[in-house]
Image (tube, rainbow, N blue to C red; front, side, top):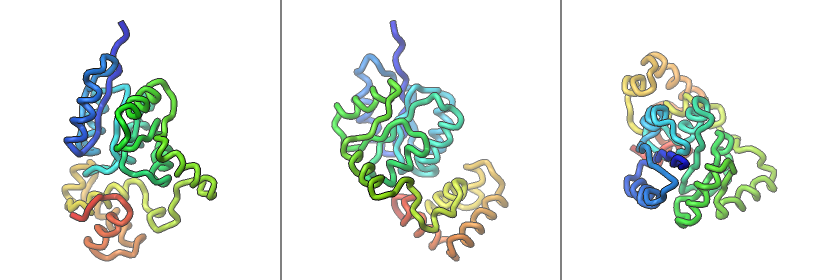
Length: 220
């Protein structure tokens, strides 16, 4: 008898997590082996669970989905990752695939479409929701071959984005050092670099910048 495909859910909204579990649990082909509601917790638990597939939200507390994507694909390239997002713009879709996502589906997709997306990704095929595929194609036809936004955010490193997100969510330097397992001095250095690169001069300005560029979903 063929073993069930193991699925891990990363989603900060409990109702949506429960809905996914309710949809997938009766299916004899799949087994839900874990769930997480923030990015840092997700990385830790996925490393332990070693699932076949991760269903991944992009907008989460502590560490965003793009960072989770990169971390998991770097450590466990065999794990398939299907992004489930509310964002339909080519910017998000292309960035997800640049981070090595295996598929991209919109959260308001039908159950049948989600099942098709999961099946496709598990079988090794790339998947993009029909509703966003046109946006991506249009972006390419307009000559936007990559996702670079040509703004000051381009100068920010991935680690700086992680710290900027946490600062925007209200975490203090010591809390960030504990979460990311780096020294307080390193956090302070990244914070100073961010202020210098972005020409921002206080915590409120950093929070506003993080909000405007989608690193946090609301001001905290």
